[in-house]
Length: 226
Image (cartoon, rainbow, N blue to C red; front, top):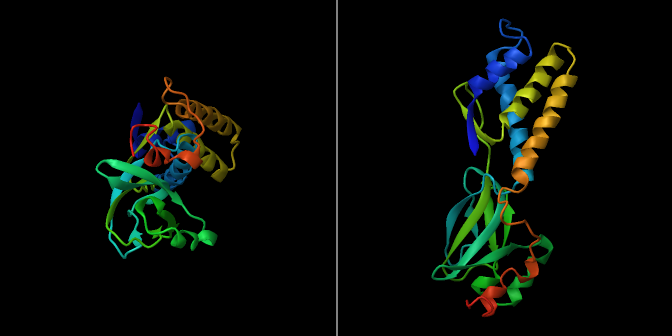
């Protein structure tokens, strides 16, 4: 289960572990900055271990003649794009290489041929859509920026303890103290996080995806769908 942990709790733990409870050597404001930096590093580690952990989605209404659309304001990384073809049926659009940007222009403007590319804060579909369509963008959102002790983060299996250990390293480095014990804590907590996130569905093993046949069901009746 995910656990919600407040910045104030982490500050308290950090001060205890670094003997800074009655000291102003490191202010709470500094600790919040350190925790924010560490949280964003942990966030990357979490999505490296499990790319769907923070997964969310947003619908995009494609308008004929318009190929570029704004990404969500909290967009970080794309995980997939679905193009609705009929009813509740969708196919997976594929990202296209910029070098191949003109290739699809010669196979007709058909919904199932759409590709996409992420350009800064926008997503572009290729070829330029000539008809309206509905799409769904699956993406990982940006991690929240922590600015106050009342802010919270969501991690799994004691992930916040990695942040505590990491910030303890920063504090110990600032006061020129030995950091080895905290470094060892980081290694231990990171291993626990990776184990917890590696396979969250124990009843269904992970497998390699054959992207060459990812939309075969749309073109054949193998799955009872055309």
